[in-house]
Amino acid sequence: MLTVMSEPIELKLSVAKFNQIAEERMPFAQQMGLQLESIATSGVFMRAVYNEDFLRPGGTVSGPVMMALADAAMYALVLSRIGPVELAVTTNLSINFLSRPLPGDIVAQARLLKLGKRLAVGEVSLYSDGGSGDAPVAHVTATYSIPPRSA
Amino acid sequence: MLTVMSEPIELKLSVAKFNQIAEERMPFAQQMGLQLESIATSGVFMRAVYNEDFLRPGGTVSGPVMMALADAAMYALVLSRIGPVELAVTTNLSINFLSRPLPGDIVAQARLLKLGKRLAVGEVSLYSDGGSGDAPVAHVTATYSIPPRSA
Amino acid sequence: MLTVMSEPIELKLSVAKFNQIAEERMPFAQQMGLQLESIATSGVFMRAVYNEDFLRPGGTVSGPVMMALADAAMYALVLSRIGPVELAVTTNLSINFLSRPLPGDIVAQARLLKLGKRLAVGEVSLYSDGGSGDAPVAHVTATYSIPPRSA
Amino acid sequence: MLTVMSEPIELKLSVAKFNQIAEERMPFAQQMGLQLESIATSGVFMRAVYNEDFLRPGGTVSGPVMMALADAAMYALVLSRIGPVELAVTTNLSINFLSRPLPGDIVAQARLLKLGKRLAVGEVSLYSDGGSGDAPVAHVTATYSIPPRSA
Image: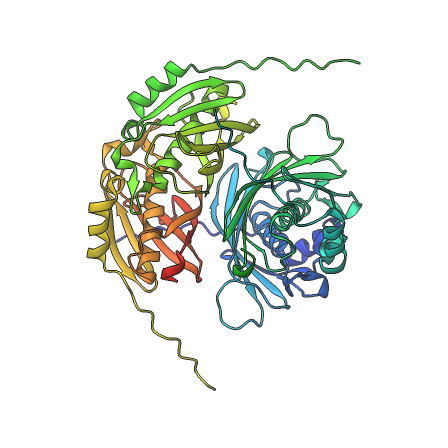
């Protein structure tokens, strides 16, 4: 039986490079304490480091923090495959909030479902770091549009 | 022919009351310059007052600003119908980004599609204030869960 | 004051032509009794003519009927603008079910939110024909990918 | 170190029982050749057995077949946890179409992301059976509303 060897995936972005882009060009990522922790062919991990500004009425972490984290994690994931292309932009993002996270860091794990010439689709699971249990607090699917030149 | 008179809708939240909640309890709303402008039975208008922190690579307004604005507009809309219930929470939010807004205020127009005992569903159209043309820059649908006591 | 005259929109598909495509090439559309009723620049109307196969447990119209109707209405809408391009395909469809329709026809009203070179985004409101009240029973947003040649 | 033993999950529906419900009460499931193949605590597998009526222009399997399959797989999954409750209904379904499946069976793998008292959220990966490669052809997230009595 033959084994099909798929070509190795080349990562086109480092953690340091992304965090530099975020620091210089994504002010909201700074406000929300977003830090890319790892990039691999299997996906990326990004963390939102907790501060009190995360809270919303009811004492839980606000939805916009989780949406921003998921969107930035997908951006890092897409750039890791196509290189640091500025105008890769989200075309669709859908989030299901599953439980209310207690105050604390939120961690995102993003992976690709499809990398096409024009669209990249991925899913992001969000976890409350230090929360009891290992169930995600939110689940996101997102589509990015890839500019023609970078395809 | 009889005319069916539907009961008048009672608004249970004022613009001033919501902006007070936002000021005291929603720090991210402050960071993003969110201001509720009007509440009516037909829906609400909310504005994200532009500052440079809105920008993302490519010189356009970042997605998280638009998602936060849409989510907060829906929150105001739901509270205007059920009263200032803290734990009305988003269960699902889906956004389509339609065009890249130039730097400037973003305005949200939110209206209800359904107000049930347990779920409220609405749609939000986002516009670039001062942008050329009247096409929305993004479109959102969102579902809020209504706590049992407030139903 | 100057009036900006926008160019008139040319419709590239007739009701008869779409219904012919549906009859010849979309067997599920036949099974579900889908009939395009009108095409205009403001949008399209499509009807799912009721038969007992629509029902699901609980005596209400099944979700798949409504999803198929919304998807086909968006397809007709997109083709009305770009011409009868076979491989315009849905990339994303999100539906919110708002109330349970009684047995009967379902009518879809679809309109474009954006028509770009690569993506078309629209929304579809579904109504129970003959249902009490004028509230939609479901609301859909959908994105179609437009093949390069037809852009 | 203590090991937390989670309570074993009781399955409240058999494959045979679901297929009986489908045969008697879900005519569209019959038209689309939907067959539940397995139920486990980790999720369910359901198959849409190919017939020529699946096709749409372009020679690919139509979206409504995939949406119906995903929705029915989620329904089986939810009923496997709460029992055969008729009025568990979809409130939201979002699908990303990732590639165009060749003519052939479509297989759905559904798993729960959350099972709450009022809402169940799950994700469904759809595969082309016999297709080259193991990438999904579509990905779905869906929310079901659980009636009060069955909570």
